[in-house]
Amino acid sequence: MHTVGIEEELFVVDDEGRLVAGSEAVLRAHRRLEPGDELDHELFLQQVEIQTDAHADPDALHDDLLAQRSSAVSAARAAGLHLAAVPVDVLGGTEPAPTPKSRYEEMISRYGEIARNGMTCGMHIHVQVPDEDAVRVIDSLRPWTPILTALSANAPFFNGRDTSHASWRGHLWDTWPTAGPVEAFGDHATYRAMVDGWIASGAALDEHMVYLDARPAESYPTVEVRVADVCTEVDDALLVAEVTRGLVATILSGGLDTGSWRLETLKAARWRARHDGLEGALLDPTTGTFVAAEQALESLLKATHQGLAETGTTERVTDGVHRLLTSGNGAVRQRAVAGADLDLAAVMADLIHRTNPKHD
Image (cartoon, rainbow, N blue to C red; front, side, top):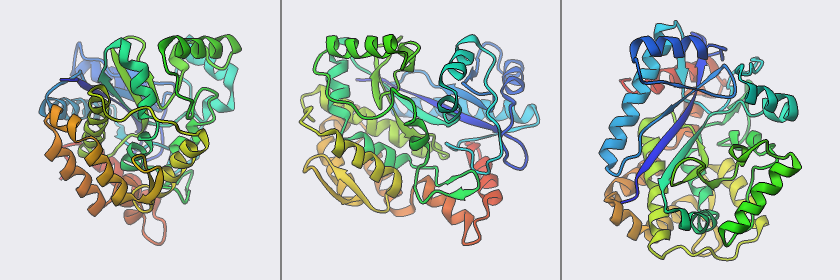
């Protein structure tokens, strides 16, 4: 059984839903309420990060994420603030405030506006993978990651405007020189040479700044998949995590070969997923064609049946996929709340409410 864990980045906001450089206050409150259980800093003081442990049992992952979310929300409230699980600054007008750590300060100094564009909140999924298989897994995941992006798409509004995309976060993140789709590596030596080359060129300060859509983790025997928006609804986050685990398990069992993919096709697939979410077309990696999102997701379920069966999540994932196809992802929900008059204050109020896993 391949364990899976979740990292979520969350924005710190005030009563009006505007971003606040309040992470230190939230972390202090969290230490008082949950001694020995730390929240994490992020690049900017407007953000905090929560992490689950690694779990083989889907129910244990569910309970862990609920607990992490609940304790973080409680800490923010104790500090007179709120948390919002939203990928970008919806209302705008907030100047990024770097967290005062030497590494973050060096990132801001070297990369300037690129780093400031990095004030976004994503969700990273870690799936246990033997070290010798990590490169094969990230190579094989490349055409499938746009589907994960579409499921999690949760960023239609940015800086007070409708972006005409279901997810704008990825477009901001892609300004980093180490982000974006890549050729298949084939083996660890080739991957290692690329990482060393990026660091030598200055495109990355260190290995942690290798911002591939999927990468071997530095400190854990996992593959880290980084294409998902942070999801406002916990159930959406858990679905993306289990789909990711199903993909990885299927690859490790001999399915979903690396294949031959042109970068142009992978870039188009990423853009289409960010633009359409689940309301248009997605790349179907089993045929290499762009099809209706429902058809692409049915292909996903068929292609990963072995991995989903192995992890015991077939019914859970199938029901979750059909739920999102029916009710819509986070982007759909935000646009419904905004309405024709684009009431973004109402959007932020709803996001704050739904970030709390105890909401009605």
